[in-house]
Amino acid sequence: MLALVCLSMSRASSPPLADGPLRPVGDYGGRSITATEIRILDVSVPAILRIDRTSLESSLLPLSGADAPLDPYGFAEPGDGTFWVLGGRGWFVFRFSEKTGELVETRSLPDPGQGIATLWDRVGIVAVRIQPGERLLLRLEKGAFVPFSFLLSRPAPELTARLIRNLLRSGSGTSNEIPLWYTSGPARVFLLGRQGRTRSIPVPTFATPPQSSAHDREPGVTFTYPIRDALLREDGLWILSNQEGDRTPLESGVSRARHAVLLRAGRPNRVVPLDREARALLDVDPRGLVVLFADGVVSRVALP
Amino acid sequence: MNLVRFASPRFLASGLALASGLAVAAPLHANNCIQRYAECLVRASDLETWWQRSAAGIDCYLDAVACVRRAYA
Image (cartoon, rainbow over all chains, first blue to last red; front, side, top):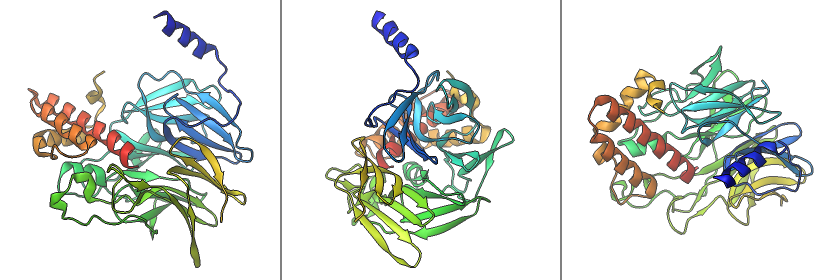
């Protein structure tokens, strides 16, 4: 008990920002990019890791005060001076001060979320859906989350398949569009516009569809999982592969997330092989692609 | 904390749908996320009242979402 008290006091009295060399990310929970920083939610601390885009030097902003575990479902920064983070398996939204990391507000959600993101100057939530044909993406308007875009939950023959089919994720966008994709299914990215419209873009995949009959296989193995991350820049769309080959991410011997691909209109795709499994594409500049690897290390990968 | 009190009626009704067909939701040889989900639903279906089954069904589903999201995403 004494040790716990000491730990608590030590944590509370430490400064919110601790400058230093770039530390590994424990449990990646999402990211954002500002003009000067890459920000990563690490729910294992929990904290926001702030990385200088030029030097890759970092500082840590611990998030404190939430009374439920934070979910690694992304975070939003709508410009109100707070980070919005889901917690309690999507039942709550916690708002933390961008300056101190302290809890500012807790909100409960009528429909739990599976993801949260900044939709330009607003907060967007990807809702958990059980039934098919329901709007997946919600946006905060006048204090309430209302449907935004016509992306719908997709049907599937049974519950577990329905669950897997309706995991929707979002990546880093531009001032005009934000990339979204279903975790399972065809290799396709939906670019969400500011008015809620989407345009669908097929992307290259390194995944091979399962060979045997769906009736013979486990629910999660009947799908493919082509995309792990997407980073939209003005000059093109970067994709991080997920499943590579015919083994899905939970099968033994799987190879995943070993390639980043840049898609540009009217030009051939640019493929960047990665020397180990990656988790997210954080940034890109003329010096290279800033990658979060699955081992928690952030580093810049030179472009071939 | 009773999280179900926050849930919308529509979402709660979906929870009952989960808790009614549950025992056959997934084969037990499936991967850990799905196996745990199936076992959770079996336990939920044994509960006494509609509210309990619905709440437990939703909890099972959200646990599975968290597990699968972490595994596949």
